[in-house]
Amino acid sequence: MAYSYQGDWEKTGKAMLRDANVSWKDCNEVCYAIRNKNVDKALKYLDRVLKKQDFIPYRRYHKKKPHRKGGTPGGWPIKAVKLVKSVLENAKANAENKGLDANKLKIVHSTAYKTITLERTKPKGKAIAHNIDLATIEIVVKEV
Image (cartoon, rainbow, N blue to C red):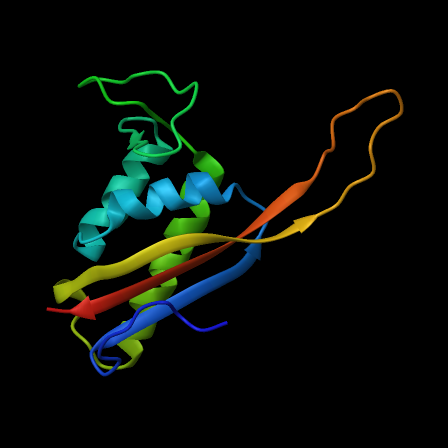
Protein backbone atom coordinates (compact mmCIF):
# COMPACT_ATOMS: atom_id res chain seq x y z
CA MET A 1 0.00 0.00 0.00
CA ALA A 2 1.50 3.34 -1.03
CA TYR A 3 1.15 6.68 0.72
CA SER A 4 -1.52 9.01 -0.59
CA TYR A 5 0.84 11.97 -0.08
CA GLN A 6 2.19 13.34 -3.34
CA GLY A 7 5.18 15.55 -2.69
CA ASP A 8 8.91 15.82 -2.28
CA TRP A 9 10.25 12.81 -0.33
CA GLU A 10 13.75 14.26 0.20
CA LYS A 11 12.91 16.48 3.19
CA THR A 12 10.24 14.25 4.74
CA GLY A 13 9.89 11.53 7.32
CA LYS A 14 7.03 9.08 7.05
CA ALA A 15 5.39 6.36 9.12
CA MET A 16 2.43 4.03 8.63
CA LEU A 17 0.54 1.62 10.85
CA ARG A 18 -1.46 -0.99 8.97
CA ASP A 19 -4.52 -2.95 10.13
CA ALA A 20 -4.80 -1.51 13.62
CA ASN A 21 -7.76 -2.71 15.68
CA VAL A 22 -9.16 0.76 16.32
CA SER A 23 -12.02 2.89 15.00
CA TRP A 24 -10.91 4.44 11.72
CA LYS A 25 -13.36 7.31 12.21
CA ASP A 26 -11.80 8.26 15.54
CA CYS A 27 -8.31 7.98 14.03
CA ASN A 28 -9.34 10.21 11.15
CA GLU A 29 -10.60 12.89 13.55
CA VAL A 30 -7.38 12.74 15.58
CA CYS A 31 -5.31 12.99 12.39
CA TYR A 32 -7.33 16.01 11.27
CA ALA A 33 -6.80 17.70 14.65
CA ILE A 34 -2.99 17.48 14.40
CA ARG A 35 -2.61 18.17 10.68
CA ASN A 36 -0.47 21.21 9.72
CA LYS A 37 0.92 21.54 13.26
CA ASN A 38 4.46 21.49 14.54
CA VAL A 39 5.40 17.95 15.64
CA ASP A 40 6.40 18.91 19.19
CA LYS A 41 3.20 20.93 19.69
CA ALA A 42 1.13 18.06 18.31
CA LEU A 43 2.75 15.59 20.73
CA LYS A 44 2.05 17.92 23.67
CA TYR A 45 -1.55 18.30 22.49
CA LEU A 46 -2.00 14.52 22.31
CA ASP A 47 -0.55 14.20 25.82
CA ARG A 48 -3.12 16.73 27.08
CA VAL A 49 -5.89 14.72 25.38
CA LEU A 50 -4.68 11.54 27.08
CA LYS A 51 -4.88 13.34 30.45
CA LYS A 52 -8.36 14.65 29.46
CA GLN A 53 -7.23 18.26 29.82
CA ASP A 54 -8.09 18.93 26.18
CA PHE A 55 -10.41 17.25 23.67
CA ILE A 56 -10.44 16.19 20.03
CA PRO A 57 -13.01 18.23 18.06
CA TYR A 58 -15.17 16.06 15.84
CA ARG A 59 -15.91 17.71 12.50
CA ARG A 60 -17.43 14.89 10.47
CA TYR A 61 -18.20 11.79 12.53
CA HIS A 62 -19.98 13.52 15.41
CA LYS A 63 -23.28 11.68 15.69
CA LYS A 64 -24.31 11.46 19.37
CA LYS A 65 -21.17 13.31 20.50
CA PRO A 66 -21.69 15.88 23.26
CA HIS A 67 -20.61 19.47 22.80
CA ARG A 68 -17.53 20.65 24.64
CA LYS A 69 -16.29 24.09 25.62
CA GLY A 70 -16.74 26.43 22.68
CA GLY A 71 -19.85 24.69 21.31
CA THR A 72 -17.92 22.05 19.33
CA PRO A 73 -18.72 18.33 19.40
CA GLY A 74 -15.74 16.48 20.80
CA GLY A 75 -14.40 13.65 22.87
CA TRP A 76 -11.40 11.70 24.11
CA PRO A 77 -10.71 8.72 21.80
CA ILE A 78 -7.93 7.33 24.01
CA LYS A 79 -7.13 4.23 21.95
CA ALA A 80 -6.93 6.21 18.70
CA VAL A 81 -4.81 8.94 20.31
CA LYS A 82 -2.29 6.40 21.65
CA LEU A 83 -1.85 4.80 18.22
CA VAL A 84 -1.62 8.11 16.33
CA LYS A 85 0.90 9.37 18.88
CA SER A 86 3.08 6.29 18.40
CA VAL A 87 2.97 6.68 14.60
CA LEU A 88 3.84 10.38 14.93
CA GLU A 89 6.81 9.59 17.17
CA ASN A 90 7.94 7.00 14.63
CA ALA A 91 7.70 9.53 11.77
CA LYS A 92 9.71 12.03 13.83
CA ALA A 93 12.41 9.42 14.50
CA ASN A 94 12.53 8.51 10.80
CA ALA A 95 13.00 12.18 9.90
CA GLU A 96 15.78 12.56 12.46
CA ASN A 97 17.45 9.45 11.04
CA LYS A 98 17.47 11.15 7.62
CA GLY A 99 19.33 14.08 9.16
CA LEU A 100 16.43 16.55 9.36
CA ASP A 101 16.12 19.09 12.18
CA ALA A 102 13.58 17.85 14.74
CA ASN A 103 12.62 21.37 15.84
CA LYS A 104 11.52 22.40 12.34
CA LEU A 105 9.28 19.41 11.55
CA LYS A 106 5.69 20.04 10.54
CA ILE A 107 2.93 17.51 9.88
CA VAL A 108 2.03 17.89 6.20
CA HIS A 109 -0.07 14.74 5.82
CA SER A 110 -1.99 12.68 8.37
CA THR A 111 -4.97 10.48 7.66
CA ALA A 112 -6.62 7.18 8.52
CA TYR A 113 -8.35 4.70 6.25
CA LYS A 114 -10.73 1.83 6.74
CA THR A 115 -8.93 -1.25 5.47
CA ILE A 116 -10.73 -4.56 6.01
CA THR A 117 -13.68 -5.82 7.98
CA LEU A 118 -13.31 -9.03 9.96
CA GLU A 119 -16.57 -10.95 9.84
CA ARG A 120 -17.54 -12.32 13.24
CA THR A 121 -20.16 -14.90 14.04
CA LYS A 122 -23.52 -13.66 15.18
CA PRO A 123 -24.51 -14.45 18.74
CA LYS A 124 -27.47 -16.81 19.13
CA GLY A 125 -30.76 -14.98 19.14
CA LYS A 126 -29.30 -11.66 18.05
CA ALA A 127 -29.72 -9.94 14.70
CA ILE A 128 -26.66 -7.72 15.12
CA ALA A 129 -23.45 -8.57 13.29
CA HIS A 130 -20.41 -7.93 15.49
CA ASN A 131 -17.85 -7.12 12.80
CA ILE A 132 -14.45 -5.56 13.45
CA ASP A 133 -13.22 -2.72 11.21
CA LEU A 134 -9.45 -2.29 10.98
CA ALA A 135 -7.69 1.01 10.23
CA THR A 136 -4.50 2.17 8.52
CA ILE A 137 -2.85 5.34 9.84
CA GLU A 138 -0.28 7.27 7.82
CA ILE A 139 1.65 10.40 8.82
CA VAL A 140 4.21 12.42 6.84
CA VAL A 141 6.32 15.14 8.47
CA LYS A 142 8.36 17.69 6.56
CA GLU A 143 11.16 20.09 7.49
CA VAL A 144 10.11 23.70 6.96
